[in-house]
Length: 180
Image (cartoon, rainbow, N blue to C red):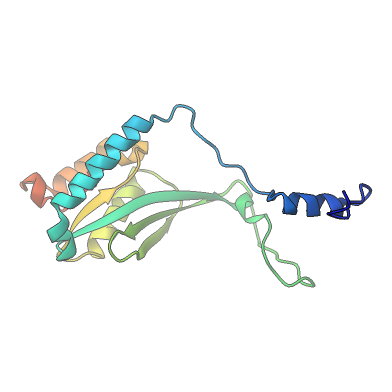
């Protein structure tokens, strides 16, 4: 007790003890108890093999690799802690806290650049629009997309769009190749 000059009536003493013990206040991380480490390792190996196979085309800029996902923000997500001047309120106009904004984003595997576009929702129509946007941003390049298993990524509308885009081409020449 004397080493840390603890006074049990003071919150500051507890904070000092926690700091000395290497304990800090932080947000928890959720862990999926159903996660299959072997399946994750197998998928990682599959992706490494795919990237190694296409390495030359990727480095030559013929094949653009994009890591794609969506983010759905509720307006209520804006109401939280931010850094700002002590004497000024940080106000964000929110008409309806149940409204949301969806962002489709893709990170370029080689460049690390971000291709971001806002939408009103994550759905098949917006996914197709975003895929068209990616094609426009990648002239003379084929696309290899890594994305999750969202239902609208796998919908009949998206499958039909990919079929039209890739029609008549062998898989190694597809304009858009999607990997889950």
